[in-house]
Image 1 (tube, rainbow, N blue to C red):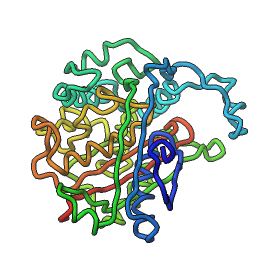
Image 2 (cartoon, one colour; image 1 turned 90 degrees about the horizontal axis):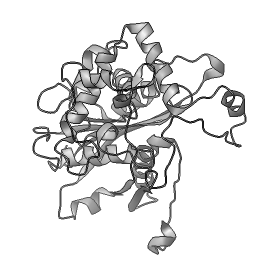
Image 3 (cartoon, rainbow, N blue to C red; image 1 turned 120 degrees about the horizontal axis):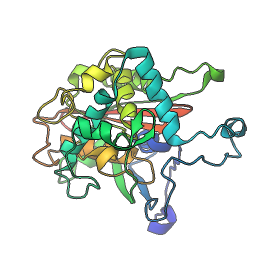
Length: 329
């Protein structure tokens, strides 16, 4: 990108790769670099054509990665993206009594928002029954529990407060950032948790905020189970209570307590390069600028959260959480 854009005198580069959470991580790292005096303006970009180029949809095993020497020992058992998330969903159901109908409410909320987004891949509003009646892909996850695969991209500019104040448009402030991996822990792995268990508290502590302060949340939604576990781990409800929390439209803007993914998210809108972290930041910024679609704009949105999930909640993963506020917050 530096070469393509003909940028000169670039003083700081960061290509940290934590999968779908990478771009949330990059925003936090850009803020750190600015605070350290290394950067005045940072550019974060994402672009890709997985749909046009026929990228596997997550139902076929991925080839072993040479740089991760333990993966070949797992590859023989045929792990795929979808069956690893399905395994986590099964465990959550076993531990806490979570149901497919409760997971379906997450898709329902996303579809209510996507109907107002002319760019969304799936704009039809669906019901809980339609989600649970959709074809089973990997038990207990149905087709409508899974994200779309799209081409696309986006860009974020992070700059110093002094420069931001000189701009002729509303700006958004980074209030707190946290990032954390979750490993397989030598096989002692709890599938009901994500890395948000650690990244969330770090972000809230740095921002001096609690979940009660959050008006809107962009939550990575590769699958419905990803959202449910993340909401629990971020502290919006007790562990195991996520099913009840997301039910009955509680994630729908203008109706529920925690409006989420008002662009339709990965479940309905887009999931470029199978890495939706950047789009989560974009919609959080739109909400704080009052630039979301009027039908889904959160009234008097002051604090927004963006969370990215990388890797797989069924195995190794990396999470990142950012809290944003209006420039005058």
